[in-house]
Picture 1 (spheres, helix red, strand yellow):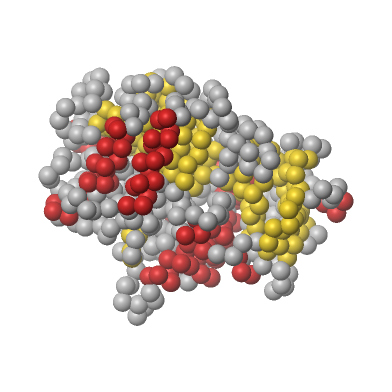
Picture 2 (cartoon, helix red, strand yellow):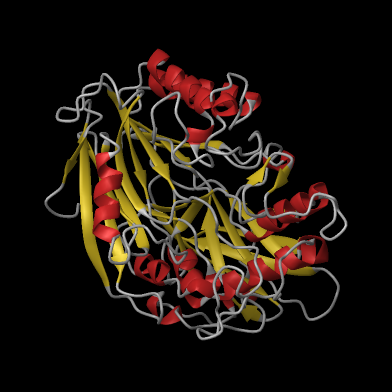
Length: 521
């Protein structure tokens, strides 16, 4: 991938920037657009001293464009801490990324871009804490499918000022044509281009459409993102050498390697993710430290090392000791990160990842969901080994993908040697969140209550499951406990910020066992 050329931080006063007008209230920017910064602004991959700042310039010609950025401690930009100027062009679809460095930990900053005589909306971002941190709050989302309905979960999260970061766990875009997986006709949300996306221009156009959504612009403007891809940023049921939703003979859809390369390039261009020597090799797994309160380890369970999915009944493959979900290189890296978090005495160790980790069926029988860790049991067993060897005291796994809400204790074998009343035998907890807009039939219809009850009864470690709403969840961390609160949207069929608190679950430090909360954190 080609980088934008870096000009370095400017020591001048930036008179040209100062001469441009700007809107001083973030709330008043909800519908602001202009012909240059149509796709809004975003920030991501925050660290204690830096954060990625992103925008996209709509060019007036085919040549390179120069873009300036200013960062301040206040939204009136009276306390400017950094200025930078970069150049962008067609090679990266006129997207811009700046790694704003030299910032202070656990602090809110404001930023804006200018180019071609226009100025962007004001963005708000925040750095991570360093050292002692007493509390962290994370908003968690996944599976935002534009033709299925409106991104009301984004709108609700954008209105919150109590969050440190948004965690997006994949399926940020979907690759389908209209009606293949959702009909956006009645919502005015027909995918663009209106065919299954295959090429670099296709993936760029689809990302651009998602960034134009007003609720997407709002949440990105308000909060920094930490994100990973899942399969639909590529194609349905992606694995390391192909995908279920790809014609592998190349006659209709071309070679998989070309499609994967196009999807990866567009993702790094259009998402506020740090591009370094690692990510240029398509490696998206990385670690974030929230002071000594939590270490967040982001995994790629989809595109790097995953063997092809098999049938749920193929027990020989599912139990094979050589079967990989992460790949050997990522597995080794994960073991190192777990040990480091333990040695650094992080109060909480968290994984951010795509597919369900908790066992769904006993070893030796068909997999509950072969697309999840249940279809890669030896891989999961090796991760359990890492956690036990490092003596991780408090583990929480945060999961997307399933379009429904789940809360688990995490024993190695929930079907033997686990006490459902006390949680004895559990070495962690897992929270899986429902989708922003993608559908679920779990719990719906006249047999819905029975389906939910049967799902609970078959899993002694399962504390909660519901697929009847779309929404998000909030993770609230202190040294004493972790609480996850699930929020449901009233509708996704029209724009609305009406939501309700559904359920909350707490695990106390040292317990690795979930109890229901009486109220949201």
